[in-house]
Length: 249
Image 1 (cartoon, rainbow, N blue to C red):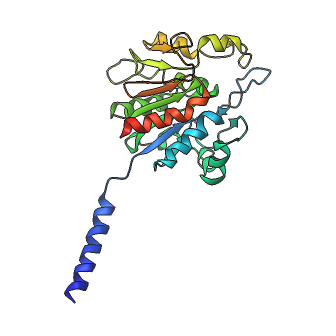
Image 2 (cartoon, helix red, strand yellow; image 1 turned 120 degrees about the vertical axis):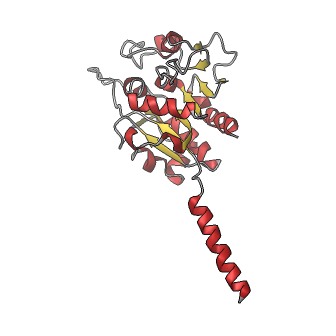
């Protein structure tokens, strides 16, 4: 009888402790609602699947839950075919279910997240980079000790983030974003003429030490500086997620 009472008491205590425990913090992936750049030729501005699906898989495989947020919430679109790990995470890890039911910024409590990741595609330059609610979320997560990660054009999403000190988040930090030289050589956004800004130029304008093909020994390098993890091009997107996890240990 005494043993049974002890078991009941211990179980109740365990349930009580569990219910009051702080929930494990998650990772927030910011995506764009853009489909095209608004020009007559409808140049593609959708999110780049290969810069978002692999990091999502890395976060999940290390035990972290992931939420998506976009400027308008709801459905978001992706470019690139679902190959390799992108196919896997879509089929087995619920990637599309979460991404296409993204939260709106007002639904996000920054205290629930230890990190933010933003991938490329041109869309974030149009609807994330100057969204005050999303910029505030990024600043709050960083100032609470969180980690910011980006691939490609994703770095442009936080180039304009201002901290509570009034200083730009990127000031005096080495950050790798999509470089001017590549932008100017590609027709994807008419050599950049359709863009609101160039990522490398905007980073430098706001005090960052923007990295490019001349400053990096390998153009696929991942750059880590003061809890900001970044890379210029899509092949290293998964490595950004891995470095974020290492910093969070």
